[in-house]
Amino acid sequence: MAITRAEAEEIAARWARGQDGEPEIAEFDLGYVVWTRQPSTVLPTPGDGSRTVIDRETGVLSTWPSVPTEEIAAIYRERRPLPPGTVDPAVSLLRLTRRSPAPTTVAHLTAGDRLFRAQGVKGDQEINHHPLVRRRLDEADPAALVRGAERHAELVALSDALHSRGPEITLDEARAWLLHSRFQAFLVRDQGDPLGGAECRPCETCIAVLVDFAVLPWSDLAFTTEWRHGSERVPEPGRFPHDVARTLAGGGWVGPVDQSALVTRAVEISGDRLRPFEAAQRAIAEFAGVRCGRRGPGTRRAVRLLRLDPVPGAYAAGALAELGELIGEELFPIGVEGDDAVVAIDTRGRVFVLDQGGEWMVGATVDEALVSLLTGDGPDRRVHDDGSW
Image (cartoon, rainbow, N blue to C red; front, side, top):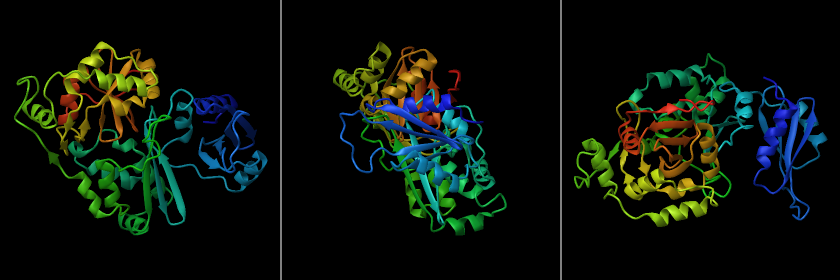
């Protein structure tokens, strides 16, 4: 799927939003050099103003210093990067003409003398994991797999590295090759989010797989151990299944409380882009401040730690607005799952989770969503590019 100039211009325009600059694009035979030109009132800084090359044929992105575009084109012809084998970069790139990448994760895996970069896979596209990674996921207990883990940047980077060694590589050979590899993952967030660029820990499924392939040390499995914490002091007996009610109560659930200050703070952080509609205010009043101590295998998928607080997700107002436009309803953040996924409610009371694997409808009501998230059962339908699920 070739990238046209019009598509490259759309991507450049989206990247320039919020940067107080003008999108610039220079076309050459193998692709497009894209950057944002700062206004004349901004004093240029040496080394600032990096360029991005979009490969015309593959959609592969690469970052370059602020040097003349002719020099970039000449070097690119000599050192053109190979396309990854796990995802179609052109499909991922074209999604950027309609949606921002945040919230997502970027993974860096250095094996030998090569650096493999990957980003969480969103949208309607096929994922071609290396046979070793595919087999590892297929053999895992589904109840212990994190929702959408096959779309996570950490496993895409691992598959890309293994694809470079061919389909015949054995598990023992892969482990020996990756034993001295280096791995890092970073959060990608909307502009202004203090977590943007922060190094992050992979999800429980990714940790288990990366440990199995000798990318991470065995000691990291401590972050995947099952954890259950609860209390019998349930404020509304009979509202939830007993285990869910215990988990909520153990995390501080006491019933409705005035949380207007938290709502106001979330709106302020968003730059007044968020509107606190009735369903959001009700959910925040009932559950804000609750930290659910439940992690491990669930009924049909893994359960992750859940913190109910609208403030962290308020920085994702842009991503929430894009999803809201797609589904035809406004959204407001109500929590964070696993330290990296934004939990939000829409005006109809439905609950969605936004993470590096896409957007997921996890409950038609807050109660259904809490049961789903805290038991690993119930809805977990990915929102497709057309807004359906």
